[in-house]
Image (cartoon, rainbow, N blue to C red; front, side, top):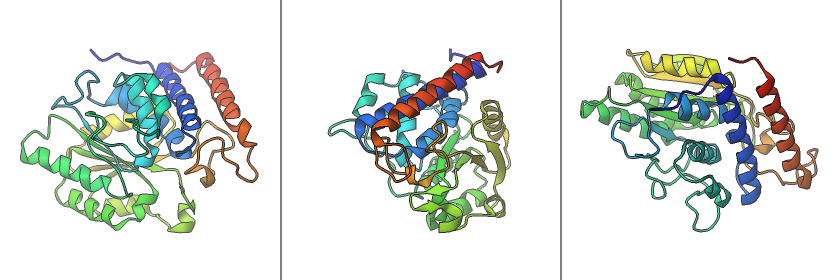
Length: 296
């Protein structure tokens, strides 16, 4: 039977996941910081409350399918999986090392628990549509739910909108897309590079039910995800409003931390030798605040 975590326990878990993300990125010496940190709350809610899955039986036919389209944020998925019991936490230290299962983008050849191998941005929603439509063909669409996690910047890719049109036309009600709306991409802010708004109106025009949520409010995340599963008329798009680099003050809302790890020399930022220490100190301080808070 799946353990039922309280909201406080889930928030503590998200904080632990953020700390492990910092540690593994430092050990790797490469990787993405901002996205993994801002998605820690959502991955915690998924793996420890919402997803139907079994770490001891990762190929369980009735498991929910989780497609990570923006595979570069895989550190947060790896850490969540390790904490959920899919593999030993010690493996996290091998991120991006030669021969490691923890590649810079998730690979199905490495883990049975992964549904797809990610690559160029924009592919995930099409893959998720395939899983959802196949479930309908096989008449098992009520046995599991398909979740597709995407970045906001990949909404600039044409393939994403082809998939959005397909899902809307076929009313794939066993599909939920979650967009990480952190407003950054590797070379700037999304609204400067290629404006996305009105993002909600675009998905609605393609026949989706659209919801907004605070991507850092655990109670709201859980209630929104559960509501998404209950909608039967059409596919659901959740726009998760997040803060890039959440939890680390000098990374928050700063696109320069999109594709680099702590320990990188960036003008105006803390000295590279001090960055990880500062990040972990801030997260441990937050951990104490969570422990003292009256959350439940």
